[in-house]
Length: 265
Picture (tube, rainbow, N blue to C red):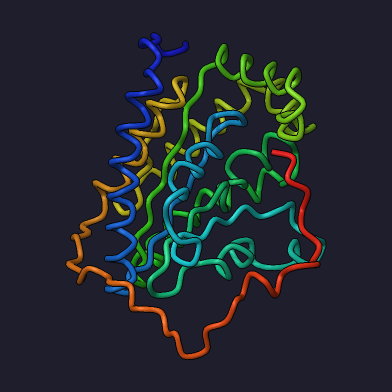
């Protein structure tokens, strides 16, 4: 059953609150760089749950050298011969990095069993080993945060229809999306089993309602900030140095005769 809808958050309120959270993300970035922390943020959810929009909101004002986004394509034939977690581990953070997985090793708990890309034995083996592996990940000093973005049936359908009708969103609508739409209850069962087997004290899942995208983004970012004990780093105010006049010349005159982009706007 869909969660009762609240009034949609106004854009002006959303942008004001998002701006404040983005400032805090910058403070988090400074702390991570200074301390050499390693953080993994796993974002999972149904198709059209809002993972992409959340990632854009989180990374809009920070450095891509610190906040790295990983969205892996379908595994190659070579990938399929590796240990399952292997292709994800090569993207794990080094010191001073935050890695955001836009879908993760949890493909084996959702997409793969529902769409028939893995066997029942592989699915069960994953659910058995995943909590153990995540315990080792955190034991190595990596902070692991896992968010499930929960969207309701009606809202998912609305977003899919918007993709069908909007030429700048049609690229988002793939055969996999249509398959996930058709198999709503299969995905629900896979989600429930995943949460039952991998929601642990060491690596808990936290569910974010995203029928209202704006509320969902703010709640998710606020939660992430609240789970990391970062501190604001005091920095000396930067002052621009004076430009040297030693090699001064008319550097605009030297551009005369070059090819310029037509100024249409």
